[in-house]
Image 1: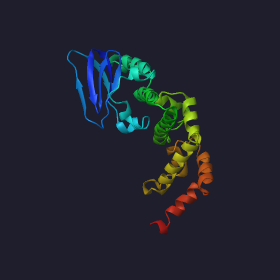
Image 2: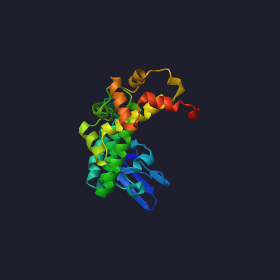
Image 3: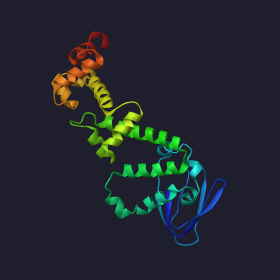
Image 4: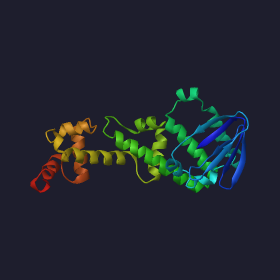
Length: 238
């Protein structure tokens, strides 16, 4: 749980740390250890609760940041506090980007606070790539699905998409083709679709022209979609 103190102060205890968080600062509580919070007067706090697993992609040891006044702990703490201060119920309703993009920004700042730079870079790259790849695989059959559509879904630029895929040794086009080819095999092997023509399957896969699908399938598997279907539906596979 990440919290920002809008007003008042709070005593935070976790592990061997015992700290008082004052107005304008923020702090993290780790779910891996018991914690104790105490306030003796009215306080106004904004808190974000998120998955420890998702957070650990960015900060491998979250407990290192637990029960610390983050603004004092790192120069990046002030940027994090400013972001959390801006997150109000009304601002959340009018966000210019998807909520996941805001959470990514929060994680990025926490990773910068935790350091070192090499760990931040690796964690960010892997986390972002897996999110982008999951979306690509989910929408690979949408006609016209491209880098722009993926970037818009995640509230980032197409340059971010390109660089993220490039840093892990691949690219958008290669992953889109791979996802579509796996879907193609499923359609061709599934008895529920055995009455559909190759052109109809190409359309289900998001292709505007069946000829392009046939060419890409042959290039990938060394056999045409029609021949692949005949082989997979033969006596040996029944």
